Amino acid sequence: MKTMLVSLLALGGALVLQPAFAQSGEELYKSKACAACHAIDKKLVGPAYTEVAAKYADRADAVDYLAGHIKNGSQGVWGQIPMPPNNVTEEEAKTLAEWVMTHK
Image 1 (cartoon, rainbow, N blue to C red):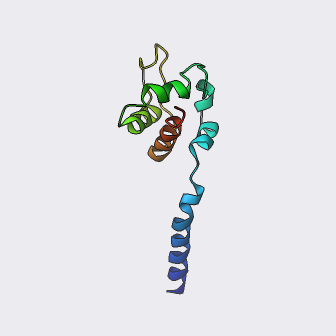
Image 2: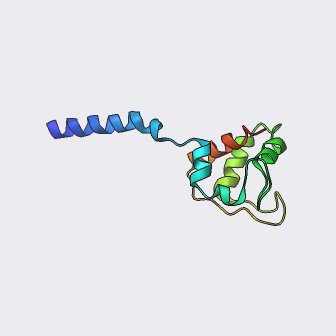
């Protein structure tokens, strides 16, 4: 019984602290493959994030739309070069999309 109680308390503590370990959009941008093809203010292989934010500024579902493209990839949206799917969780994709949209 005592062992079970200690385990439950440890699990509860880990769940409470979990948000503290979440990465910001900028941290994800730097730690994932994003920077290989995208820059904030200039076109590389893919569009600059300022261009992306401007293109979707009036779109109500911009974050969800971009998160889908980040996670699943896309083709033909910004030209002939496809964006491959990225190894990110749904939450990470949404965090990245929210961060991209701050670059208006």
